[in-house]
Image 1 (cartoon, chains in turn blue, yellow):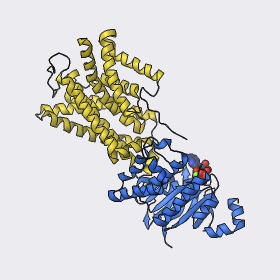
Image 2 (cartoon, each protein chain N blue to C red):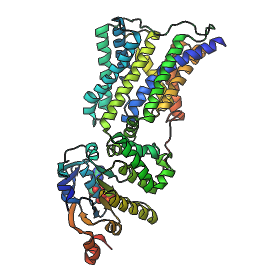
Image 3 (cartoon, chains in turn brown, purple):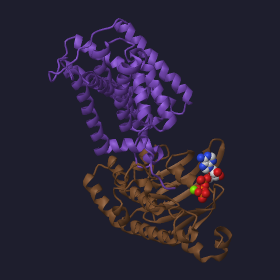
Image 4 (tube, rainbow over the protein chains, first blue to last red):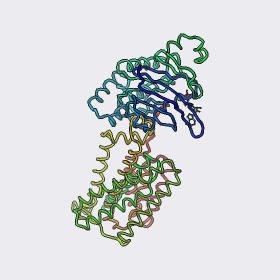
Length: 237
Length: 290
Ligand SMILES: Nc1ncnc2c1ncn2[C@@H]1O[C@H](COP(=O)(O)OP(=O)(O)OP(=O)(O)O)[C@@H](O)[C@H]1O
Ligand SMILES: [Mg+2]
């Protein structure tokens, strides 16, 4: 398998305090990779470092292109869609405007219009609320909107930061079903950060485990799923 | 009664100009949280450029269009070259920077064109429109130009993806970056637009108050009052605020306190509104679920 994103020696800082220590990650083309770990382990920081949203060192390579020094906007334009912690909703824009924002960077208008239809097929609830102010959507709907916005960028890699956060189990299942379809049908590779390890292991084929800013374990998700001692030691179930 | 209507019309005319200034202030405020104290002097400087062009024989409307363009790129340039390096500077440093810009523009205009007042032509005749002494073509022209500009801006922000990107960047910069929006360019664009709008205000007001380097000082206070009365974070509110300030200022000035105290009245109005409704009369509260 080839990697769509290669991360080597990634470190990150908030002011003087260091949050990541020489992370090495391989995100496989077409696959789903999960990044697990306790609160404060550095999961969010890893995603933000990949997108150059924090001060960082180390190299990140996307399809052989070095993106270590690109701006966040450029990295997005290269096909990385980041669904951020907290969903990043544009609260005063309508649902439609949240999605149409992607037209700003898309040159292929026709394809973008088709993607809009596709997004509404994945998330019919958003279509029902198309003219609603996005700040008035429920938490689950805002999470759907965040994924939908990312999808509108026609990305090749999606970075998802705890898409299950604060949502009822039924909604979580719905969102994860859609993520699986996006991965399989749209061939979008994914790096997903989750608290809910069991859920992430279902979706992912490869897992990295993070503890205080370091990778402490990695392997195929089947291996982790079936190894009770590993699970008990690192994931607590 | 006739006098009353005349005062309202005159108020609306002034109000249109205040609305432009207020809109320029809001345009920068919503995207950067800064109040551009140099807004008035930038407008004054642009108006001098227009004057110089017209003086050199350029037709009025050509000079009008060129001036807006020059002001637009000037605003863009100021943001990129002077303000962008100060992105992470403390607010006080920025305030000093704005005040420096203000005095620099004022001084340069004085140096080039001197501080003596100049007559600035109006494209509209001052003749009475309906033969009843109520509305002059000049007044109608000022309001019409303002409304056309507002219409164009509304279309731009509502119906173009660039306008949408600017709104998104102003609302949530980090999220906008994650949608690929080059936020710092959007701020520069905002500065360009604000500067262009200011130039329009300057060119509209110059025939009324005469052109000199201190022309905009009072106007900026009224514009500021308009923005605060209407809601400093709300473009449409600021425009409405500009018109409200214009009309009230005129009525109160001619019926109650006299012309000398008009400017103080504008400030009293600001304080009054801020005490009762801190977000301004039309300060929009964004409905939001957490
Ligand atoms: N803006 C910040 N300023 C300073 N320190 C920060 C900041 N954001 C995160 N940190 C610190 O960096 C470390 C990693 O945080 P991060 O948000 O990456 O954790 P996480 O794994 O995403 O946790 P969670 O599961 O709670 O979201 C933590 O110790 C945190 O306190
Ligand atoms: Mg996190």
